[in-house]
Image 1 (tube, one colour):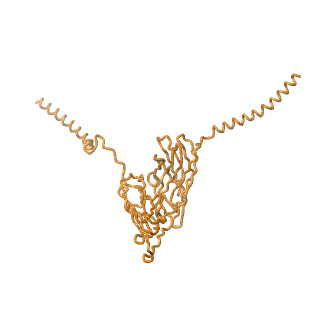
Image 2 (cartoon, rainbow, N blue to C red; image 1 turned 30 degrees about the horizontal axis):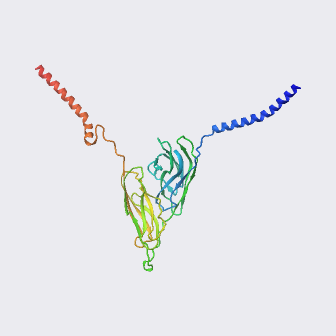
Image 3 (cartoon, one colour; image 1 turned 90 degrees about the vertical axis):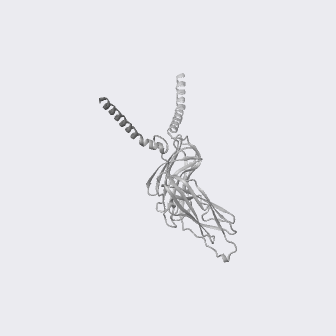
Length: 353
C-alpha cells in the first residue's frame, strides 16, 4: 500500500514539475534575448529639414538640418537626398557649402561628407572631446543652388539616418524632409499714382552691410535686414534675390519678407549669411522688389572678406627681428669659425718667424 501511494505521489510531482520547467525555460530565453538586444536610448527626437518653400531660378538658399530635444548627443550619420536636376550643392567639402551645426551654444562639427551618387550626399557628424550635448539646434547647414527651371520642384529628404549618444547608444529619431519649389519671381503691379490717394513707401535698413573678415570655409553670423512700410497703403513684397560677382557666397535664411504684404507702419525681416570659399574681398547685391511706385527694386550692398588662419610666428623670436635672426644665425656661426681659424693661423706664423 505504501509503495502504491509513493508511486502515485511521484507521478503527481512529475506532472507539476514539467510545466514549471517549461515556464523556467521560457523565462531564461526571454532574459537571453534581452541581453543580446542592443541598448537603445529611451529618448525620441525629431530631425527635420528647414528650407524655403519657394526659390527663384538660379538663386541660392540655406537649408538647416534641425534637431530637437536631444540628450547626450555625440554623433550622427545620414544621407541628404534631392533631385540633382533641380537643386545642386556646388561644393560638398566640409566648411564649404556644408557647414557645422550648433546645439545650445555647442558647435557640432561636420567630420566627413561623401557624394554617394548624383543627388545623394552622405554627412557624418562627430563631437570629439565632449561628454554629450543636450538641447535643440541644428546638425549642419547646407547651401543649395536652384539650377532647375521655373515650375520644377525637389524634395530634400534625410535617409539612412542614425544618431548616437556619448555611450554609443542609438537614439531613436523621426527623420522628415521638405519640398522646395522653383518659381518665377512676380513683380507686383504698380498702380497709377494719379488714380490713388494712398501709396506704399518701402524702407530698408541697413542699406549696406560689411560682414567683415570671415575665415575661409566658415560662415558668418546671420545679419538681419528690416523691410518697413512707412506709408498709409499696404506694401506688397515680391521676389528677394541676391546677385553680383560673389552672389554664391551670400545666402538668405529666415526670410519672412518674400511674397508678404506689410501693412502701414508694419515691418518684416530676413537674414543673410556670408560664407567665403576663398581669400579676398567679396561683394553682392540684395535685391528687394515691391509695389512701391518710385522704388520698384531696392538694392542693398553686401560685402565681406575671406581670410585664412594667421600663420605662427617664426622660430627663434617674435616679429621681424626674431625672423631675421633665425635666418642669419647659421651665417653668423660660420663667420665666427672662419675668424677663429684665421686668428690661430696668424699666431702660428708669427711664432715661426
